[in-house]
Image 1 (cartoon, rainbow, N blue to C red):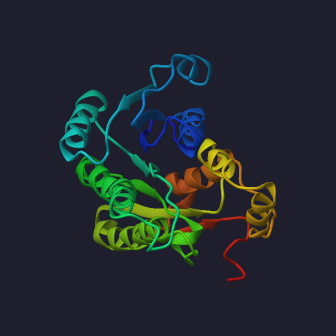
Image 2 (cartoon, one colour):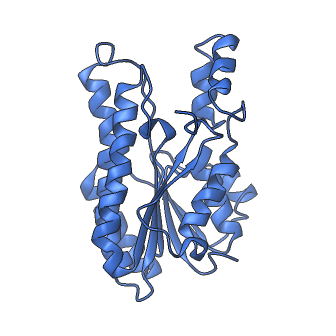
Length: 252
């Protein structure tokens, strides 16, 4: 097991990529602490995690510094350590700069960037206490690497995560804390499925075709990349941005 007895914290863990990552980490022997704006359903806790005492989910607003700080203190008191942090929580946003309201832009930055900052700020002091160091994985995006028309707020937020990752990697290498990011392409999650409902089937196929593999990823495929960066399999990687995007960026 690649994460046996490791205490892991995952934001946005209730569904989609976050839930797939939580499930994979659990299967790899980790203690899984999930943070989300919504509570984990009882059916998921029973069916996916078998009511395990290695799983602990809490409803926390990651844009509220006091809430995150208090939760971090609770985690340290209860579990004594944190080995891995996965900053996965994020929201989507459509529109160019004229179409995007100030409110929508600020909300996207608040969740995708400020939320990542706040969670990391209050959990990294706990990770620093480990003699063996630890690992942080930030979820960026392929279009945070190359940009995309009509996505000004989202691409700005994910581009910020890329250099947030690189700068932190330099700051904390001395503590043996490896900090990397994963840059997925399109993922077949509920959020994307809901997004496609607003468009034609032809548009969906066009999005598929943007990826060399001509499809979206399943959440479990991206979760495996997160596991790689979180585990000792990537022991010499820090400040890296791992593209797992079905070939989206290779021709750009």
